[in-house]
Image (cartoon, rainbow, N blue to C red; front, side, top):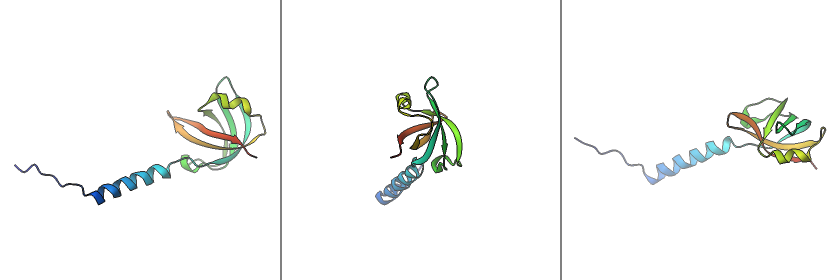
Length: 102
């Protein structure tokens, strides 16, 4: 009984690693511009009117998002222009980075 299996060459392993890295980077959150429409500190959510979020395949819209750090909400007011990144975390759309536009 022949139990040998083909070995992966270093070049094949490198190519596979590069492909995996490329796929991971492709899904990485890109900054999006938006405007704060509502801040709900109790629910740890912020409502944003925003442009397209490519990494989430989401068109421009207004939507409430969880924030990964509820303490961030203290610095925002309705009408603030922001730049933010969002990702799907634990099955929920979540703002993972946000700052007021200067």
